[in-house]
Length: 435
Image (tube, rainbow, N blue to C red; front, side, top):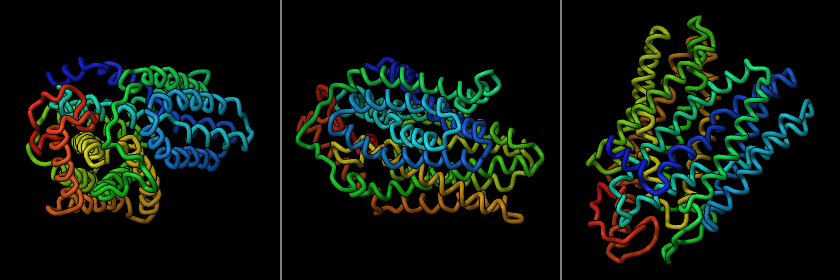
């Protein structure tokens, strides 16, 4: 755990790991609270689900634009603007009453203006732990800490909404609380020096067209992100359906998903203390395969108790897979496109999650379909893992190119954050540990 203590002591580390997580608590609160508020107001689950879909799609579509803007002018101005607009839009939903036009307008604005805090924070860790910064050896622990703690947002968020629902304010109080936390946390993070002071070099290239999606290996990496997002969306449907079919009710389904998140966070924290010697693409492929196997095992669980145990154990593969994904995003993205690259990961994951939930739901509704619903994401994940494991595949080739690029940057003393973020006195890194 010494590595985590060193990460905590880094400049800005305390804020990024505490306020940076609290600022994103709304990710785990707003979708559920919005669903409950619209249903309570209109009395129709169909409209509530539609509002939730509008919120997610608006965020997914605008996220890469916000990322590209952050790359060009820095994340601080973008965070300051969205950190104010989003909370006010969420607060407006509480006042919208039964007016459907206002509900959908404000839902669209709230989704589109959600602060790109995740991409900004992950980019900040990339800057702070760049070769030559003196902290490059802590990059793995820093990314693992960020990924694992972020997992807790999806555990704590729904629990907090459940608490607010039984209080006098109901879902409205949950939305207001999420808005306040987002406002305060985002503005706090935006004022960090690493967010306001950016070091640029000639290596930085302004994104055009599809931006990082055209970079070598990046599209193939997004296939893995798509597989993970699809599996998360599928689990959100399959696990509650499993609990219901076994007579335990949908409430237990939420508890089981929370247990899955705890297992993921635990696995991520453990993974951050390791220093695997194998290249990142191989780690990526093997972890995708491990997540696939964890889904396949779920198809054979005879009761919710056994399913819960399997979710805790299998969940331990989730955060490590996401950690390696984030490491590869920062390595494969061209200089000057890192924020946008992270937001593309969010967009792909959100879109795949929605598709995964829809497909899994159609499988669950078929007679005897529940076990096969677990097989579906397992098959997709295994295919993505095998693609990543191809020795001469696009991810492996791009990773080798990134190793050469970083080595050249260290030798040249380039001041780019992705390459050298400090004095440049760090010994030349080896290929396996440049991620």
